[in-house]
Amino acid sequence: MALASVLILQEMGLTVDIAADRDAALAWVRMARYAAVICGGNDATQLTDFALKVRAASPYTQIFVVAQVAPGPLAALGVELLRPPLNVNALVDRLRPLAA
Image (cartoon, rainbow, N blue to C red; front, side):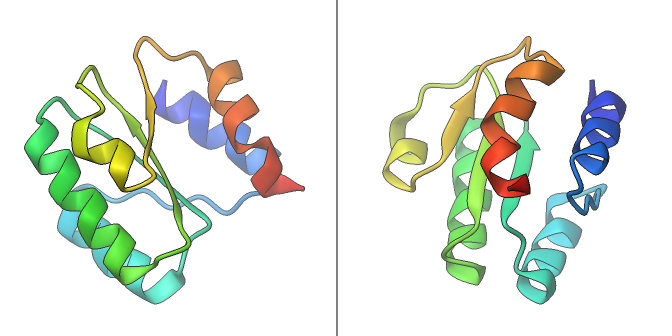
């Protein structure tokens, strides 16, 4: 799914970076000011913490979380929760406005 998503997003004309861990991703968010950040995991606390840091580093970045967690504080941060299993077409539909 990750590779398919990267290929499709690149085909849409979006620049795509992949980080192995959240600290590296956050460093890139601070430098690059991405239009969108997509992350995943199963720990709602870690995802919320990461979303808070992304929001602080880049307030206008759209944040998508692919996870089976309750929306809770993520919704308050303006994070869009995408429930797995997620197909590539669903992801493209959500990101299409960024490619326009």
